[in-house]
Image (cartoon, rainbow, N blue to C red; front, side):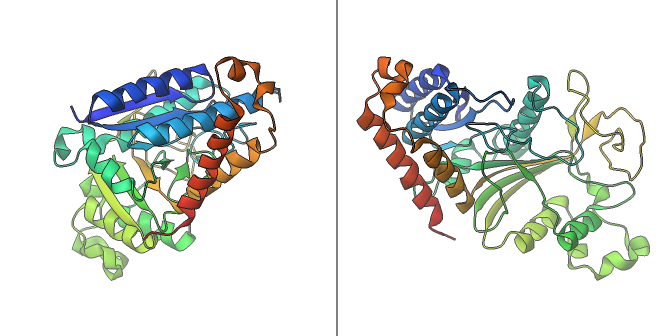
Length: 345
């Protein structure tokens, strides 16, 4: 057994129950624990319970910081607390953030892909503890999670051309699924997984290469080598662990039909409607320890700083939460913010 991977609600009483279970695992076992606290992305009318949910999130993060090796908040909404905010933009999808059927598919895709590093038999040399050791530096246990679905392989083009276009157009390689965080890829520790790009889509053979031969990446002989080279150039002052897998993500039923009509059955992107049923797609997913996480803790602190008396939330007061406990939680948010502001690369 490598360790424990825990998914938990972070906005209600189940957050407290889950963190208590995690504390027990931490006390009883010496294995790594990775947690993914989830936040509802459905938009709802403002209510008095919005601040209560934000308090629960803050308390959850405080407990996770004490008892897990690594944790990454997940939501398909930009804001996460007080209001979900606009949905995260995935340019080749038409999903509805108010449907759990859609958002759960996105989060499941993200987790299924980024955990290949320590789950797949092809990668026996990497473990859950290695992931935690790579990202948990200087007590930074929080991380941001990203997704590119589908990874933008276009019709009749090779990976070398796709990466060149991304660099020239300054197009974001991924979309953050962690609230309040935009992951640039700079000055961070990160673990990325790319699946579904076959080796025969790497580049053209020499007789057909033409302009490709002038690109430095043409000397790369594998998808892993070429992608690593791209990340080394585009993610400044970052340390990256890359995992690649040739098989794509199967998206047959019950996966929701959220792909736009210009996606071929194999996940290739066309410039026109193709009307095919998408069966498999390439995916890029990552988890990042980045200075940009300071924004998450700052925003959560600012959202709660106006609460002068925690007893206004009777459920919290009845559970035994004191004003001093709440102040300690706010201080933890500020300490975390400052911790991520210190550049370590």
